[in-house]
Image (cartoon, rainbow, N blue to C red; front, side):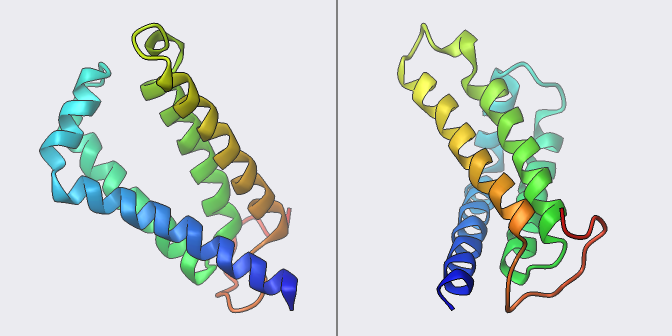
Length: 133
């Protein structure tokens, strides 16, 4: 029972993080687009919308357990992309706190990888393209 409880709490935390991130994007898509453009990406507004909807999809996958393994792996790739794109080595001299933000993404990745191999446990919609890893 403790294992199932810990996993459902982790799923809620993952879901909350991605719902919150999407919420901030939806609240001010222009600011998100500006941040994306400042990082040098083209079509910043389009990418901001894609990111917001992608984060909603991840949050739904984590809370329901559907496509959980796939969502965990995709979220891991996304988190590491964000680490390098927005907090990577080119940002460290301007602001040393960026290094901390960069490293935090790798701890998040570790949790996502752990989730990917252990699955959603009980109380989950069991849909997966990859099966159990």
